[in-house]
Length: 240
Image (cartoon, rainbow, N blue to C red; front, side):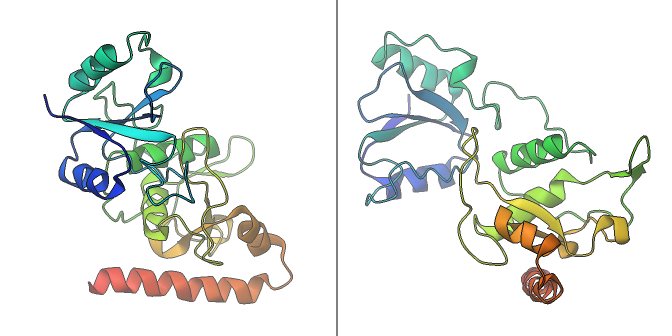
């Protein structure tokens, strides 16, 4: 049974994750107890800012990590080391769904919450391949115009942003309940104006910069600056 309990050793923990993409990990307190034990896939690269001032922010201070090649090994470790823990739905991440092998929903959607959720699920399953997106996104005119936005495009752009706003370059302002970094998707040319739902036309922004892109008096110049940033990133990828 290949079980590792990582304490004060982010470097080896990170190496393990990189070498075991099909494995599993659990967030828990330094001293294991039933109140906190959350299981994720190894590919769910959480930002994990529990200890921002620590030398080992992921495995230091009051927190630690447990890793295993299989989910059953992780469950057995929990049973042996936290006898009072009764594993239930609350112990499994709702984004990467480590307790199921069901496929992730990849299709475009008009629901903004589902769009974000699907993109996060795609990211949690590992490296995102650059999608083509859609030059002419499908529109639903049931009430008001609702464009079908591709979660693969959002997932790619979030991966490209590396946790920072692509305009102001500041780290995402907070984590969601699922421990995902919060950044918003912005289309340089609005979909309503004929813009494409593609990586080249999409940026990841903090909420402040996103509102500024829509309502700031300098939004035109900001859009040009953001366009240059996105173009440079995408050109580097294509050439590379």
